[in-house]
Amino acid sequence: MSAIEVKNLSRSYGDIDAVKDVSFAVPEKSFTVLLGPSGCGKSTILKMLSGLEKVSQGTINIGGSDVTEIEASKRGVSMVFQSYALFPHLNVKENIQFGLKVRKVPVEEREKKVAEAAKVVGLTELLDRKPANLSGGQRQRVALARSIVSDQSVCLMDEPLSNLDSKLRAEMRDEIRDLQKRLGLTVVYVTHDQVEAMSMADQIILLKLGEIVQVGAPEEIYNSPNSVFSAQFIGLPPMNILNLNEIDVSSLDSKVYSVVDSNKNIKDIGVRPEHIVFSKKGLPVEVKSIDYFGGETVFKLTHQEKDFFLREPRQPKIQLGDKLCVSWNLDDMYLFDKNDQRLKS
Image (cartoon, helix red, strand yellow):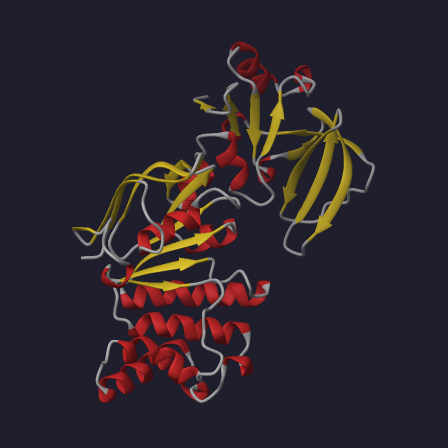
């Protein structure tokens, strides 16, 4: 069993509350991502799960056992760090088997485990190299292999891809996800990168200022954000949030205007960039910038000094400075109250 259950977890440093009364569950053999901006408490939570950080309040249950006060080495978890944490004077093989040697695993068993792990992550031909002679991606594979040979069913990963370039990050995302599925690992993965979260996670736990904002599958949080924060943190470009006091409400589509005008609790309306379209009438805008990405074009538009985005799966014949109108369907609009919480439309 490798399911994780966290109840009322808190961590304070003097008067500063880094994590505030957090509760969540990680199903066995699932991939859960702790997502949020810098300083939201995600790495602190991971360190508490691993035993590297003390718990101020609450409990941590792993595999049916309360491990809140148990030392890190006895929690049955492995950890992959952002910095790889490799020994520069040891070669790949020696780095992978270091933990096994510390635990005095027999030589024959060590050799077998290292060979199997190296094959899984594609390092068989590199076992004699030192970390200095490896690329960033290869170093990360060494860290993954070291986690594999530990034979722990729970793996905690703290921003393991942040030091890699974008192309290599995309490749490693696929490799880590494939590895997790093949080995049946329960993974808790920390990142501030929503692309990583959306492409890898079974479950996203979105955090802000030490508290959980929303928990759900990537598509659930994307399609049903419960707050302005969720709506704008997930999605690239982010959801457009239009304050009713900053736009010409009378120019909106009649159905949209009817909903907005009839509900006095609405402060903002939200629309994803892909749901906004150029139209013959609607909200008047000026084209401020155009970013062409081959498969799509992203337009930055301005309305009464308010900027927002429109995304098209083509390259329409529109120029900088063009004055046009945009609109959207009622079903694609989100409503938020004065507390930035989502209202049911």
